[in-house]
Length: 118
Image 1 (tube, helix red, strand yellow):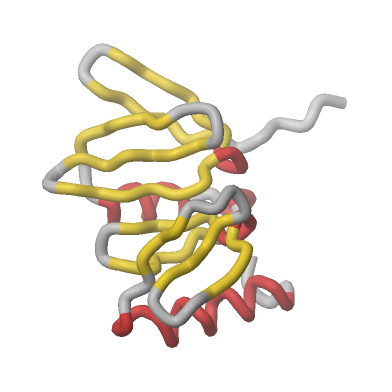
Image 2 (cartoon, one colour):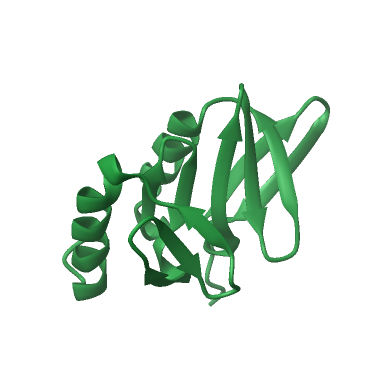
């Protein structure tokens, strides 16, 4: 029996992609554009980061995504460590961690690690 991995549908103008959610490292936004980063490729779409977060939250098997900053959404499975003002991913990417979001981000990450939040 083949396991179906959840995917996220992305589109930009006439381009369409089905991106496996497990491959998304993080997403960042500027203006009305969202950049979705995987290890292999970066996808640019028009929209809001909050819309992307809602789409990911609607996929229960997607795992956990964490808002570390107004402009950044991180896949918790790729977080290597938390610093005082940033999050470092396993590939060395440094993601900003705002002071306002720090306490909630740490709480959610700890809950995710313990398995009480999926």
